[in-house]
Length: 258
Image (cartoon, rainbow, N blue to C red; front, side, top):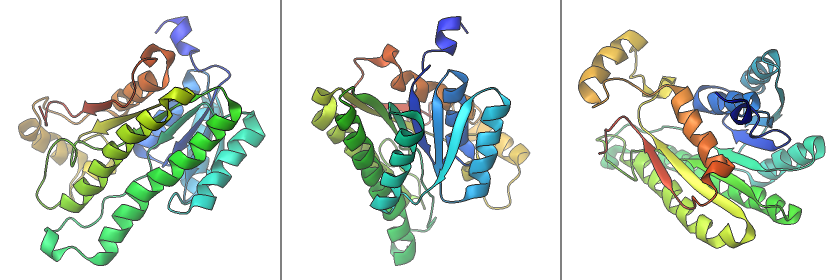
């Protein structure tokens, strides 16, 4: 890695939702490693504190803010915290999401359906609104990356139809918001990961070793994606290297939806 790439976010402030574990934590660590001041956001304080500790141990700067993305005032509070502490909001990664249901459409509970919509879709909308409002007020623009999925926008999977519908909405929301706000200097894009090295890709009771065997047959690549690989794609979209990339939906699934 060149010296310039290690500091390409120096002096910038990034907010990452769902940053207490998995992909959100990997993205937060990667942004901090390249110089960003990172605000890690999630519902549970303890995992967020762990993410902050990992960033600080590596020499980075971060703070935690507990928030529920399904409540607009909660997300606005997270953005306010970022600005009060670091002076601006330049990058946002809307990663918070849940997988619920796992049942055929006819058997899906109303509770699971509403949870998927409230967090995966409405949570992204509220996050976008709070982030864009701040970037507008600054007058300096910014970059936003939404985390969608290959399931829904790019492929279907039995038992995951409701989840796929929520993520298809994220991809559509990304494209529309990108066109709405690019003239204001705000670039909005998405990544759509497939199976990654997180607990979400584990079947009930499955070990990581068992998942590795299963993925040799299920993925053209023969394995799950490392969270660092997905984080690298997120950072590219957030960087000036992607200055003319607007409304893109980058699929990272080892060829599963090819």
